[in-house]
Image 1 (tube, rainbow, N blue to C red):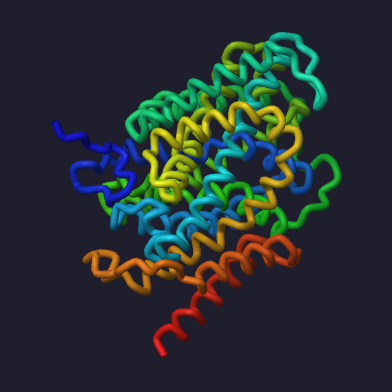
Image 2: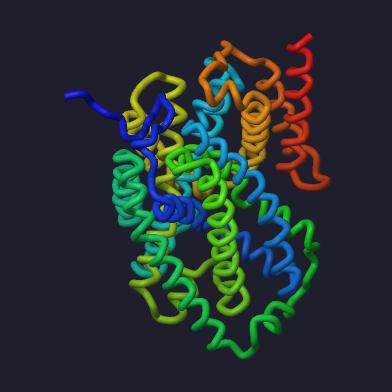
Length: 415
């Protein structure tokens, strides 16, 4: 019996592998349900009043939606993953650079996500003393159990990711929204009045920059999931809606948590409302939906580099992320934020390459180079600029430089 790869690791997704629009919407919403975005919501609430907060979400959301929407479209239209798109724009071996960058970053966030679940549960529900220098054995058990479960869902691929998303997305959205409304009702001021309190020292543009930076790196992996959509149009629409709805909910959860309960996220709000077990459920499902997507992406990327199966690389990635989770949480978040600026240059080159050579992508006539050094140079220079230039939006600065260098390379290549 012929073995079929349901995840289409090294080939385009055909018509038989495409999923319903509802399934794609659930997968993409789950992808954007990212607990770290709640921290950004807390920063936005501290620095902006209500209308400043809303405008920051709209402006940042539009930029993020434009970037991820384009990637969602090209992934769905041709059924190609990020790594297969990179083989066309960066070359067969040049694609190892973006594959390594996305894999390394996603393994890191996977580990951080595990600790984001285990440490609050160990502290708040088990009453354990957790510090950067000490983690009780029970905390490591929580990390291990969560790591095994989340690795398993990524191991079984897109089918498993779909099932988890169908369970987690409605649960997190409904329970989180109910808890947020309960917190507002228990407060002594309305939402607008509560947002007005404190020192408001963050500009709307700076706030929009935080919104963009919150998920622009993870959003680069959008083609890995939208390639299963029915069409490019569906991939575009579900991505834009999911990023607006999913991200906005996470920012709201974080903002309301901060101004009404003084906590870091909706988990602490639920604890203050005595919703202990629901808090654990929501926190776990919220992290799970993003973590299994992150590990799935890492597996695809490492498979492109080493030529081993996606499942094998998911297991290796999950093991590394689980073992290093607590260390990553306390020591690596800053470095991960640096790495976040390195991925948008990859995405913009994928987008430019696709729309400039769309016919070749669609009919399969576009051949792979070994290495496209202009694409590699664009990513390296774009990443440097994104991290060092403080003016404007770091991600957009990096994309602009990468696009310019790649465009120069295309012009030079035609002469």
